[in-house]
Image (cartoon, rainbow, N blue to C red; front, side, top):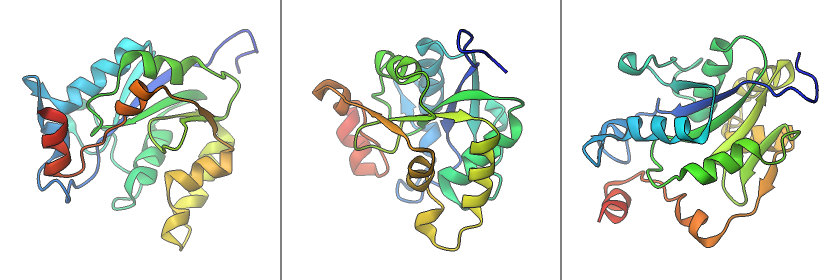
Length: 190
């Protein structure tokens, strides 16, 4: 286990396992400046300084990790990643559908408040950083078995780990535009 002078490995995670029902087509494969959006997100994480990259979702072309329990949204995807990662790590988790995320914001999320068990952008669930260890793995497993859907969410996970917030500038808030629908995608791409 790393000491206080050593840092845990940092793994960048793109959540790309959803069905894209509101978009009507696979969001991960939307074209962003001539390339699939998933590749843009992987590049942004890589540029932020993460040590390793993972993709949540059954994406063979990207060495994707299948959800621990399909149909449970981001929590199921994150649990699948937790099961696939050996040892403790810090995860920087981003959705595939936020094409405006900048490297500097992801670097802040990766480096600020290094002792926090979780870190998110104020008033937003994603992107986030999560300390992956025995306690958070047990919490993920427990939340997956909750009957109430709101308790099977990233918000519930963040509350349980005591996520800290970073305050964003106006420019950083603009980077958090998510593209869940054709209309929101058209807005971001015009």
